[in-house]
Image 1 (cartoon, rainbow, N blue to C red):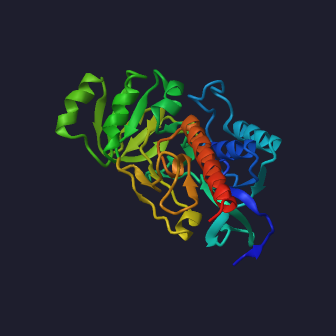
Image 2: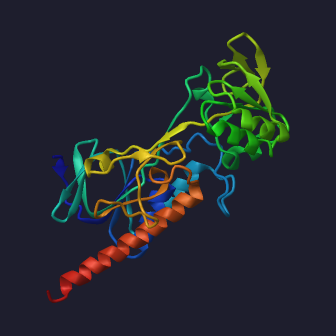
Image 3: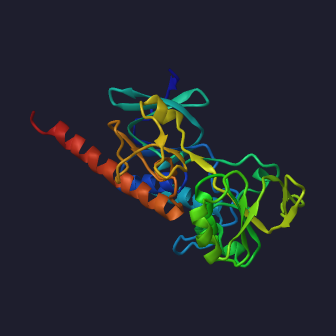
Length: 313
C-alpha cells in the first residue's frame, strides 16, 4: 500500500472540523495518542459567522477551528494537513492512506469528513452560495430578516423552507422552478403570506458578490435580496468506502449519509462517525457534541480491550 510511517496512534481522526476536533480533544484529555488528518476545506468556510453556538455567536468559522486545533495540541494531540484517500484493516487496527503516498495507523478510526452540497444548476447561484444564496433559516435567516427572499423550488423541501422563512420576512416568494407546490399546500402558503411565482428561473442577476434578483425564462425579472435553495447533501468518504461502509439515502430525501448509532458506532468494528457524515442536518454545536460522544465511546472501548488483554484467558 502506501509508505508506512511508525505512528502507532490510538485513534486516527479523519476530518478536522468541529466534530473531528471535539472527538480528538476528548480522546487527548483521556491521555490517548490521537492524530487528526485534515484536508483544510471546511464546509462552512464561506460563511460570515458561526451561529447557534453558545458563547461563540457570530464568530469566524476558521478562527473557531484554529482555536480548536490549538486546544487539541495543548493536550498533546496532533494535527496533520492532508487528505485521506483510503484505508485498510491491519492486525492492530487500521492503516489510513494519505494523498501524498504516506500512511498513518491507528487502533480505531473516527471519520468526520462532513458532506458536499450539490447545488441546483442555475447560472449565478454557486458563486453566491452562503452569501446571498442560503438554505437554513437557523444558520442564516436572521441575516436576511425583513428582506426580499425567493425560495427556489427544486424538491419537496421548498414549501417547508418558504413557510420557515416567512417567520423572518413578510416578503417571501416561492419560485416554482422545477416543482410547483401541491394543491394541498397552497392554503398553507397563503396563510403564511408566501406568494407563488410560476416559471423556471433562468439565472440569478447582480454584480459579483451581490444579488439584484432573478430572471425567469419568459424574461420576467424579479427583485430579490436572497435566494433560498435545498442542496442535495451528499456524504462521501474514500476511507469509509474502503473499509466496507456504504452511504444510504437519508430518510428525508435530502441526500446520502453513512449510518451510525447515537454513539457514532458503525457496523464495521472499530470505525466511528460524527458530524455531517452521519447527520446531514447537524450544525456546528451538534457536530461538536457528536464528536465528543464518539471520542468518549472510543476511549471506553479501548479500555475494555486493554483490560481484556491483561486478564487471564
